[in-house]
Length: 62
Figure 1 (cartoon, rainbow, N blue to C red):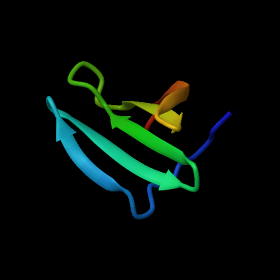
Figure 2 (cartoon, rainbow, N blue to C red):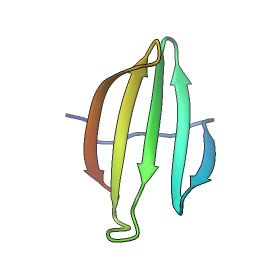
Figure 3 (cartoon, rainbow, N blue to C red):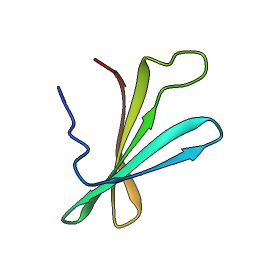
C-alpha cells in the first residue's frame, strides 16, 4: 500500500484537462494523473518499467 508519493523533480503537463506528473527513479517511471473533471480529489498512480505498466492504483489527494 502506498501512503504518500513525493513528486520531487518530476515534470508536469496538462493532457485533455488533467494534469500528469511524471518522474523517474532508477529503472522505474511513475505517472500521477491528477484528478478528473468529475472528481478533482481523485488521482491515479501508474508505475512503469521498460515502458511496461507494472501497477495502476487509484488514490485520494490529501
